[in-house]
Length: 446
Image 1 (cartoon, rainbow, N blue to C red):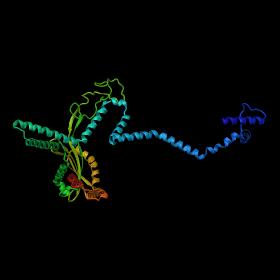
Image 2: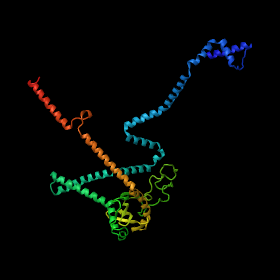
Image 3: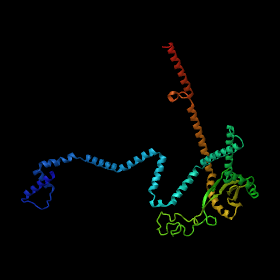
Image 4: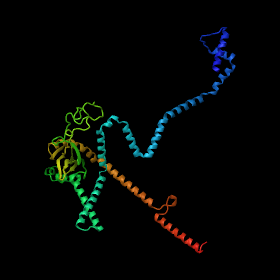
């Protein structure tokens, strides 16, 4: 309203000053003209405009702008803060382990293509991998539980057959049968394990005896031949498990896929042959048994062992490949010895092995020598000695602290009576109060 009144005042002032009315034209007002108009025609309006800067100063305007910016930033951060608060509360409620599992599962579900859910192959593979991982992580516990069930079964079987021959009603006879079942199960499981697994200590000792009995090596290295660092060795163990192999019609292992397997050609058991090849969808849900024949086979346990040796004249490096076939002794498929010469060169001597094993010897030996060389270094040995010394120091400090905690402390340092002393003190107090109450009843005490 004041601005419109000021405009009318200025228009009337210029119209009277010029002696005519300016209608439909654009008026350009300069600072002197505006000053004259406000001095002559609008004293009240002039006082209002002059007092405006006194109300709004520069400091209050700056504070208003800063506060508006902070409010806007807080509003922008509000969703993230709320999300973090919800995540923190859920984590406290579920626990870190369960919350991590839920978080990883939700992240996986967010990246899954819905079309791939129709393919059963990834689900079967995931279940298989999880089952194998579960069995591998808890194999010792499963082994022990299996032994327990076997003991119970053998025990009841022993009692049943013994009851046919004689009367088994005494507790000592049942305990004797339980001990017999325990011994039978332990010996049986250990025998099965010994017949199917490789004992690395036994292989190491077997190789050292064989090398020490070799006349050529005794002459070159010098007798006796022993391990350079005691039982220092590196080993790679594979096999020793049941595997599902794909085989062909003759019973051998299938090396390559047959031509046309997995293609969308309308074969038996396919989707029909006319469907498009959609990503994530299986091309065959019920594959032909002739094309994908499988068979469970026991993989014999194999071990590649490498260790350094030393004699009185020179040293060497031994590499061996051994296999444990079920029910048989350990077979040494390959035994190679690198003899170190005085000039720093090495000469390889093969004690056993064919051409196929000799071709793999270079690659496997090169891979196994790296970790063993690191472990044989003096700096590595010094680090292990320092670790052993630190462990002894920590044990000594912990023992001293435990001794100090067992020493009686004064009351101002958190001390008090021992548990046995508390029991005796409580019993003495109860006896004293009982005698005092009885004395009051008899009138001996007031």
